[in-house]
Amino acid sequence: MSRTCFLVIFLAFYALGFSQEIENDSVLNPNDSITDYYVRFEGDSILHSSIELEEVYLFGKLDFADRNERLRYFILRRKTLKVYPYAKLAAERLVELNDSLDHIKKRRHQRRYTRKVQKFIEEEFSEELKKLTRTEGQILVKLIYRQTGTTAFDLVKELRSGWRAFWYNTTASLFKISLKEEFHPESIHEDYLIEDILQRAFAANQLERQKSVLDYDYAQLSNKWKNASPESKN
Image (cartoon, rainbow, N blue to C red; front, side, top):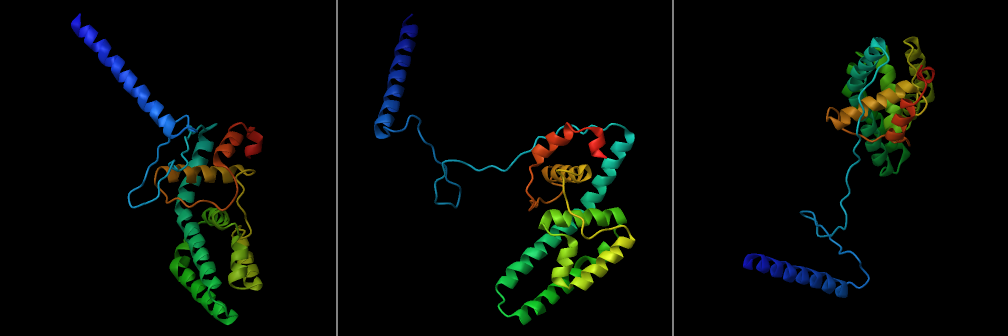
């Protein structure tokens, strides 16, 4: 019985002390109804009231209407994972080129630097690109647009000349590849599948993430295509 009384008295004093602490805090912060907490990251002298987290996608199970649709997806997946690094590299080189040109004032020096970059890019992975199949080449063209917001045709036109871009496009068209192809996952189902493949690969650390410059939301696209009719996916 004495132990029970002691426990009740102890809890009462603890509750009284806790409420007094809150009351004192309210006196110190009369305009705050909730105590604010701040965090400081290692090596950072600034206090933060919140922690910014990266977007996290919860992927649903892959459902396929039949074996052919399943096979199509995994073939597209293999090809997309193969060519994505080239599109990422092209985007990085373009950013580097534009940043450097901003600091080069004379037009003559800009042209000279552009030729050097173009030669470097061609030597860096032109031989590898020759090994791509037609469908892999077309996926690459789409991903270049995803990463840069510019078609491969316009990139060649900007770096070389209009005639050279036309010639490249004509040559590519012989293999049924259009350098003017864009990337529209909101309206083209195959483009959405490519985006889905990329997002799953990013989450699994199979590919290094590089955000698209295009304005679309993957979660909204997933909901749209999940509820789309089979006819709209063809």
